[in-house]
View 1 (cartoon, rainbow, N blue to C red):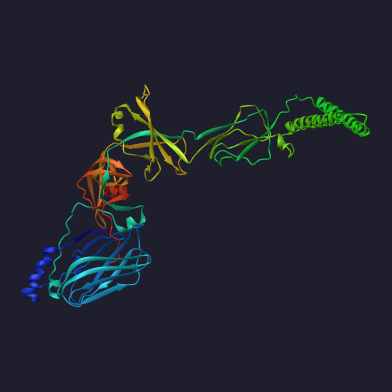
View 2: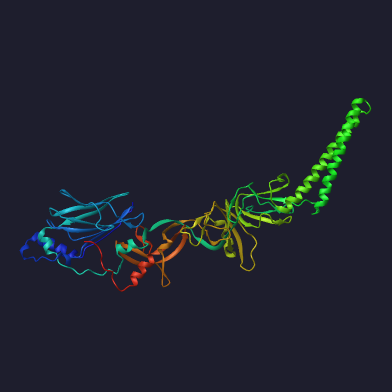
Length: 516
């Protein structure tokens, strides 16, 4: 857990002088100074869970010091709206001063009245719903009344920091983060596009000419389909023209021929039983009857097929339909299927794109080809996404240059892409081309372009910030390497940095709105 602090008191020299006076006597000659004229003690602490910003007058035995304690929940950077705060002094004895709720969101006002002068260890303890924390602030001095009366007002020095009040931070989109060190590699940023993987695109075409049945669910563009799922059914043309009378005549002729064959088979049965014909003649008659039955069934089917082709409707004739099924699982990228419409053989009805894996295709410059053996991974940066997307593996690097751009394609695979990504979407491919080394890094959102100079804003106190110019280096996973007067462990503004820049440009110092 990282702990950082910033402490100040406007009357540090006077405080030492007054202690000397208190020890050396002469208290009767000391004139008291109005406490409001003495700059307060200011403390800032961070833990992994909360930020404490606190202001209070010097502590005096028998006197009351009003502590204005500001607590920020670092998981949300919002003020704490409920909870109990305690100021604890531990030394020769222990004294605790508490308040059961903030007077205003984020601000706890506590009156601390030490009973004895001396050196104490100061701690502030928070017990809030979902957040319990403790801030140890080291040793503090509780002055004697004489030493307290000897304090002189000292004009606060302008340290050049940028003021930005807690009330402003809490009401705006604001957040900070620790400067860290991490392994980061040299990288190359190139243009890229998301494309279907090899074998991840399929066109569904019609095998025969006919009409599309209209009794299946529609599959609009963007809908998901599973492999083997029926997409459409085609009622093929009859293949016998559109001459219905001719087909009706064929049915009648087949029906009459069947009646004749049945009569012939019945006659053959009787004669064989009487011994007038051999058994072979009865078998021939039965075969002829079965052939006539088949011809009648075919003629009736041709007629029914013609009727179905004309209407494109009905439940009958399903054994004559062609069912088109999805050859892959994915999403419908294009659909030209209109129920009841006529289609020609070979016409495309659907285009399917598989989304289990996609390819990210970048344009690798010719000059980078010499370093392809050093490639150590890649990530995709897409406008609107908060963080880069790690890519799974390198698929291939092209070996034929595009003559005008002097680039070759480089392809990475991305499994189970985010639903916010779309095939055909443009982005940037960051390719890591060296071994990783330790570097000081900050989130990319912490860097602000200030008149052409990259800068970060470091929080040096609860309401104080400093502008620090930096030089930028390698980038990875939303982090950027920096060089400059910024050390690991310091806190930089990662949301709201442009607001701090505007505050730095403003000639007005914001009015202090705290409860004291």
